[in-house]
Image (cartoon, rainbow, N blue to C red; front, side):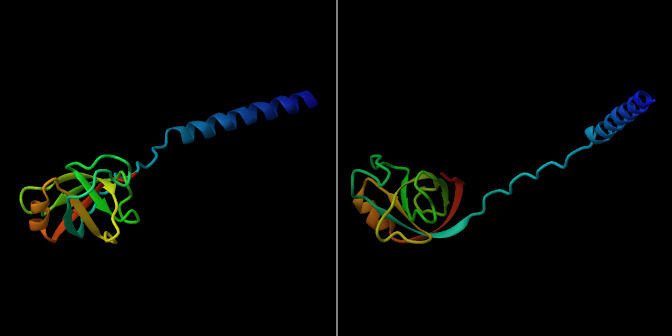
Length: 131
C-alpha cells in the first residue's frame, strides 16, 4: 500500500513539474531597451602645441586632447562638434594638464601659431567610448 502511495506521489510530482516548466518556458522575456544615444555636453576648448609625450605615455600627435581625467578618463574617445577651421571630428583623450579642469579640453596642434590663433572656443563634446 505504501508503495502505491509513493508511486502516485511521484507521478503527481512529475506531472506538476512538467506542467509548470511548460507554462514558464514559453514566456517572452521583455527585451532590454537600447541605450539612448550619448548626449553632447558643452565644453570650453583651447589648444596646445608643446610637449612630446602625453600623460598616458604616447607621443603627441593630431587627434589627441587633454582633459580632466575625472570628467573624461584617459583613453576615452570623444566627438567634438563646433570647432572652427574644419577641426570637428573624433579625438582620443591621452593627456591631462594643470589648467584643464572640469568641462575643458585642450586640443593638440603641431603648429604653435595655429594653436594661439585657435583661442578659446565653446564646443559640443560627445563621449563615444569610456575606458
